Image (cartoon, rainbow, N blue to C red):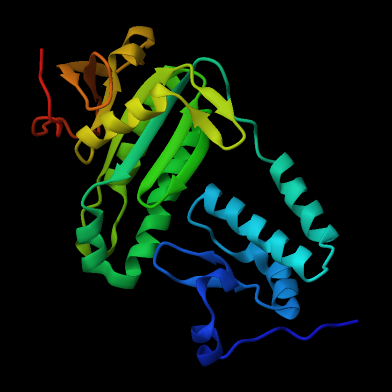
Length: 276
């Protein structure tokens, strides 16, 4: 039997609460209505066509959709099978000793005001350049949401290679309307716990603090990573001293990656605390 496509008028859509949709993105746009049987079936068919802002957003939307299907007595066998197949195709994240790379777009709010609707396209291109650099360096994407990208690598050398490649690609890209797009990045190594929802541990919080301290175009490496790092030819580290971060015990030695094609001169790190 061929089912007609479920449609909503703008007025009907406006009357529905957020809970009537499987996914509400960061801008408030509501997708995949699931308030009745016809729309649940339509959402099951269209789920793979939706571009989610992060893997966690996809997982939450999938769960809401499956709950709605159960409520309406729908057995989504084909949907579940396709989702399991897609999950099996994703490489398992490395465990044990790993190195993280966290990036964040500098001045993203100003870029959004300047570009308006065009910012979504810019964000996609930034993520693509980062993802390509991470993949080529044997890394894996852990998560990408908002302006951040979180990657993991089996070795610190791979993480530094990805960061250098990414910064060179960002500098060479022709951004729209003459805009300057820069990404701050941090690299830190540790032994976090790998769970079904990602990594958990102090090393995750540490790389986030370091990234927040960096400037656009800058690559900052923690002392723990630097101690285990074998530098590639043409790559050196600039000692930035020892710094304390809120919520972390002890001071962190920090280094700036220096290589051809990367910016070299930056203001002091954007952190509050003491320098030793």
